[in-house]
Image 1 (tube, chains in turn purple, blue):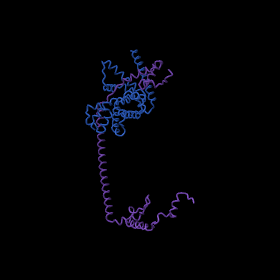
Image 2 (cartoon, one colour; image 1 turned 120 degrees about the horizontal axis):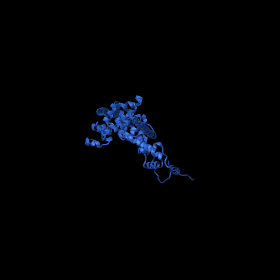
Image 3 (tube, chains in turn yellow, red; image 1 turned 30 degrees about the horizontal axis):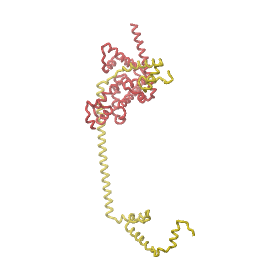
Image 4 (cartoon, helix red, strand yellow; image 1 turned 60 degrees about the vertical axis):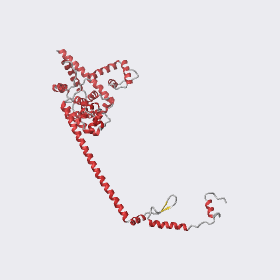
Length: 191
Length: 214
């Protein structure tokens, strides 16, 4: 045996059954040429395997074959029929469920609509109890879209009144202490 | 769907197993199933028969296999794989189950000496153009002795030989099917051939002794 290829017992079978890569096959054949015992072993196995290859193919008895075909066909037809039934049953169930859901949605909508149109005051009272005026990012007080009209009017009036407390500035050129203070707050004061 | 409509009985022969299986599954297509059977029944039956060596039992197992095939086709058969390899797995498992249930090896001699089963076997063999009656007899004897020798092999070795012979199954698949490593499967094949070589040699010596006595 050469040092190039490590031959094991299974390699003979792999070679005989043509389960080797082409490169392995060439290497194995080279090995056989240099190793007489390996050659004898392989040829002996080949001769026996050639006898096995004559093992005849046996036909299924006709009556058995027909029975199998009939049985298979009827079984498959039954399976298909039952699956169709299942699909039909499932479809019907889905249709009924969808109808019920639709009816519920429609009735809920009409009940809500009826309540809103018949007693608006009641609705506003409910929302007025929970919602407060709020300040947005620009620091503007918002009332109208979160509370009831009466409350909003009251708060709005107070808000408008607050402007009356403001005193108009008559002398714009004259610097006031307050303004100086405001101007100086962002920088160090050097007196 | 269109393809299905356009498929005629004659063109079933050109279809792949995968397509035939699909037609059978979706439409319970009789012609598709017949074509599948025409292609593979002999190999499946031969494997079962060679493993069991009893015609009645082989018939029962063959029917059982196809009942399972139809029942399991929708659930366990993956269309990406070879249908015949999948069927073969079922056939192999059913055969091995039967052998294990019996808890005994086949009585080779009773099968070999049984004239009825032997004639029955060769009656249904695939046609071969045998030249004359003498050759036919010699051929028949060779094949029957081959069957007997294969039946003598241990179950594991016989399985590998038959799977390889009837299905040309790669050793990787044989190893997967029989839950062993590839090397074990290759080793079993090697021992099977070595054992068969011994049996053939014994037979030859036996015949030689008989010839000398005459």
